Amino acid sequence: MILMVPYRKTLKYQRVSLTRLNDTIAGEFLAKDLPGMTSSVSQTAVGAWLDALASDDPAPGGGAAAALCGALSAALVSMVARFTLDRPKYVAVQDEMHDALAQCEGLRARLLELVDADAGAYQAVAAAYRLPKDEEREREARQSAIQTALVQATEVPLQIAESARAVIVLSVLAAQRGNRSVGTDAGGAALLGQAALRAAMLNVDVNLAALRDEAQRERFAARRQMVVDGVDELVAATLAAIIAQQG
Image (cartoon, rainbow, N blue to C red; front, side, top):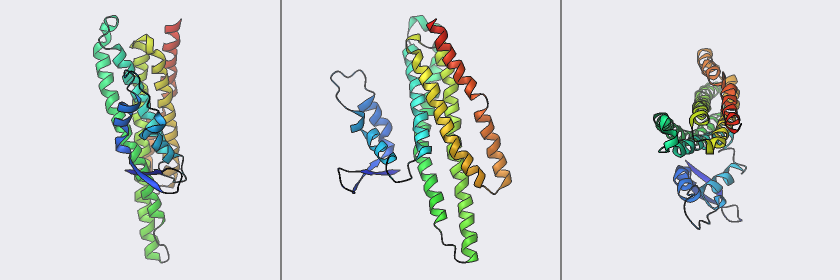
């Protein structure tokens, strides 16, 4: 996806590719071990994307922000795993942390893809609503296009929520078994994942209500329930593990 973000102080726009976001964060923002680093997040692609999010363009919007929040959550769990690997004190959990790291890196990459996918899904719905509707034939075609677009506009945020839940599950492991010195980061991951899930679910619910295909609506509703069931308890378990370690 190509984002249009404000350039200087004019109304002109500069094209910024969100597909570069991951490399930019890694290279310019999260390079914690680079001495003398002066780069500010506001000067990276992260800052440019936030400018686009804050603009009067409806995409990217809340769904894309939820996906990015989920990616941040996954990155924090990966950080805890890396702080635990190859530490003699945590030799008993090395296999678990390797698995958690691999899963979180996959989820982080998927959630970044869903940032773009959500914006694309919104644009498809908007385009369908703009179709002509003067004649009966046009109205039928328009309604069909809207329903098709709504299926994808429900699927994408549901995948964001499902991915966020998977990260939350891993945050419990990170808090309970990971390096205690970064336990609060596991807690932050759980809370960010919960926020990502809840924010994505807002879009799921509004689009689900507009779907006319009852069978499709029921399938989505079943997946929705699986995502939300027990998620608050998972977050609570993560936070409880952190509190227990501090006692």
